[in-house]
Amino acid sequence: MTIRNWTPKRLADQTGKTFVISGANSGIGFKAGKHLVEAGGHVIMLCRNLDKAGIAARKLRQASGDDDAVTLIQMDLASLGSVRDAAKTVLQEAPRIDALINNAGIMFPPRRETTRQGFELQFGVNHLGHFLLTGLLKERVLETGGRFVTVSSLAHKFGLRRIRFKDPNWEQGYRASVAYAQSKLANAMFGVELHRRLAAADAESRSFICHPGYSATNLQSTGPGRLAGLVMAPANLVLAQSAERGSWPILLCATDPEALGGAYYGPRQFGEMRGMVGRCNMIRAARDKDAAAQLWALSEDAVGLSWTI
Image 1: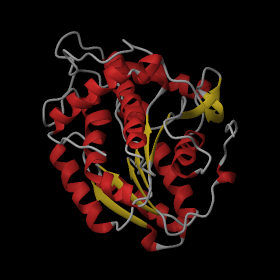
Image 2: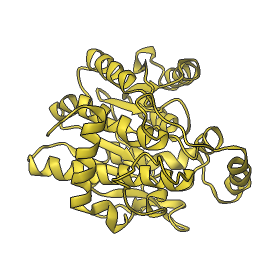
Image 3: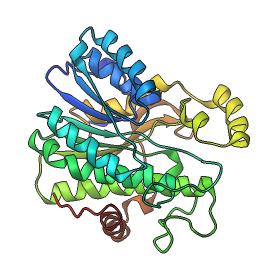
């Protein structure tokens, strides 16, 4: 059955299930977490800023009516050491993981910045940090037949529409918007390649890819420089849908029994910026097997972790 108009009314009881969400302190990650705890699930929040995340965690606990429904763990995706520490803590705290939701991200820093290990910030945070996190937590997800959810973006369809394998960190010719598009293409390619590997291993677990459309979140206000922010502010008022609506594709991928592994879900109307949620189309480059294998090898080398399903 093809899902064409998914809403949280389809969200079943999630009692006994655990969901790990990066960037769950605001925006679509927070809204998804709120629905999941209200449905009885346990949410593990992976967040960089513990002060802001602590406020969000209290709100989620209030929404659930259960102080034990939320666990907060510090993680900075711009530091591979922080990702490793966070994954270690997750494994100590969570005897099961029913869905790993790779949601956190950064967009359009006004100048080229790098992670602790020297990767271009958007590629490092949006893709490489999550690649490492997934590799470190995969066994716990596989044990439950759980789900891997990667949040990509409409932006994967723009920019160069390919990975700059000779210079993925944009040491030459940096353009923030094009580098962002590369990072979100990497998200899509990773989610598809992970699905291929799960299927080849005959694993019960599945990988899903989603996008939030054009949703008004902190992503547009905390990452871009002043000029880009001024441009986005009126666009948010006219074009953007709410973070609540933007969270629905995440919930669909993380919970719905009819969701198809390897598929790409998000809003389907107005150029996929908003509207009814269902299956969408990726660009051909996102499903390029040879390029995905090359990206996987590059990512393993970058994060220092070789992993198989």
